[in-house]
Image (tube, rainbow, N blue to C red; front, side):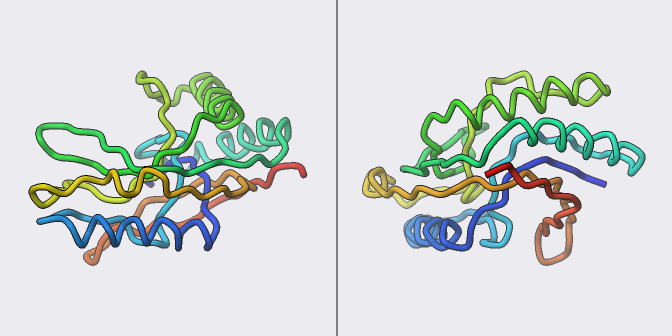
Length: 179
């Protein structure tokens, strides 16, 4: 199973993000865009795991989520990562100490059971499209002030399934925050 831990998004936030995706899609030569139902915030990518680890991961999530109350995030603007002249466009998440602390605590506990922890600094974002090539002269500055505030209510273990018509994410386990 290909697994990651993430934060599912509200329907309203997905609609907001879909408008941003459409703006980029209408101004690009090519790209693969994330399906609305797959939009999320990744906390920890765990990769290929066998089902025997699932119980340990669930226990870690329960113990950490129990320490937190739900919190708000602010999504504002567009950014990109570039690798080998290919750009991954994402919606930016404004600095949020609770979100960063949640991710760090999960990483620390997951490493104790032998699961890989990302070496790069955590940069929370929501992937909108991969391998995007914008048309000449277009940039995303017009979307820099697009802003949406939403509440984070839960943490989920997702399974990535690669199907002939694209990737599908299934929720395997969810733990809600205290409120």
